[in-house]
Image 1 (cartoon, rainbow, N blue to C red):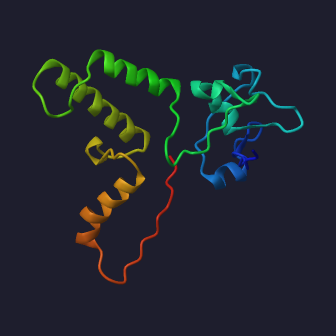
Image 2 (cartoon, rainbow, N blue to C red):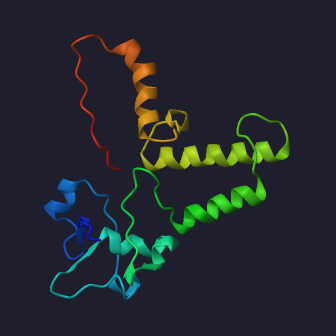
Length: 170
């Protein structure tokens, strides 16, 4: 079985002001070659590392081989794989405070609500929102788009208006 594997964007670490990096809208970060694992390092003549090489170690499911090759998972529209930080956070939730958010007055519900609101504050800070109340979590992109369309859109749009959807980078 053959598969087409898209090349992920590469970051030029020697020139962080590269126009390609700015044009693609990636968030700048620093990385020293000594902090990269040997599998992430590339030959000196390319002088770049792909986003896939940087993030692959964070995804335990990708550490396995299928038919003698590293697993590559491309069905992200159906299910996205989770990095270890997410797996640990979910494990902590299920082991320590598995309960409904904003629905109970007992300890577990209060703890779950506090953690949920903390996540909302972290996202607000990350995207520079003026208030954590501006952050609304949805199950997926379709639900988020429909939520905006049926709440804000029905009140603010009129026939003939056009919307331009844009990927916002932080």
